[in-house]
Length: 264
Image (cartoon, rainbow, N blue to C red; front, top):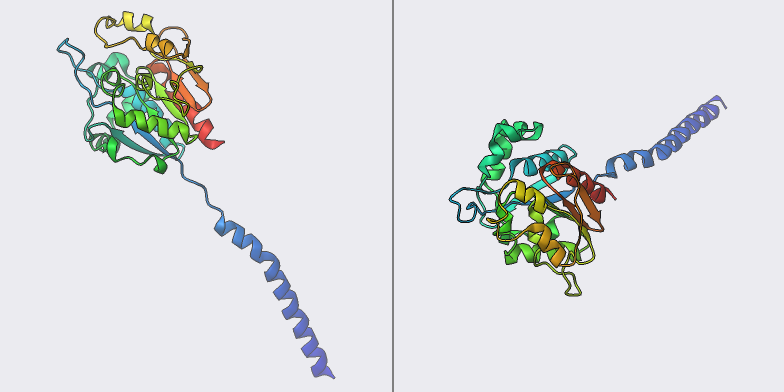
């Protein structure tokens, strides 16, 4: 009799333990199967270095790369950097002057790893848009010459936009929007709220007669609803998938708007 009672007690203990383990199992499974998607953003830099016929050099503007790059990278976004020619893209020498120093440019100047990425940009024609969630174009005067006319860039922007992925541009980078079209064949900026380096800012840097076209005029000619803030102050617009910023001071604001779209 005592042996039977003992066996019953053991059975009850085993059953209780088994039930407890069954209740805990789903919690363990939830913890091990939950994963966060890594966001991938493509940065496209200019490969053009000659400032018209002036004999001076241009390229991409460091602040317009560094500020959005660090903002996104610090949030866990994986950034790939490309350019039409691949390799080291030209840096606008003026953007390296102390007058244009910011916390982001100072961080870049000390960041050997990021400089190495810049030195080895991916050739734009090798990029597969399907691998990325969004594209970001930093400015500098260079894009007015190459990215504005580059067929690979034009197709890339159209691919992202028509695939319902955000496309972002800052300062002179909206030059790359000169030729891209929507699926219906109309200019991508038509009917869109847009901004970019203004005519008054171009006049202030005395390059109105040097650049191949004025960005503000081009955006309006393509049907964009152009607006601007105070010269040199942060100003950015978001209209659906299209995000544009006016000048170097607007670069991080554009990145913030882009991240919000990616997190939706």
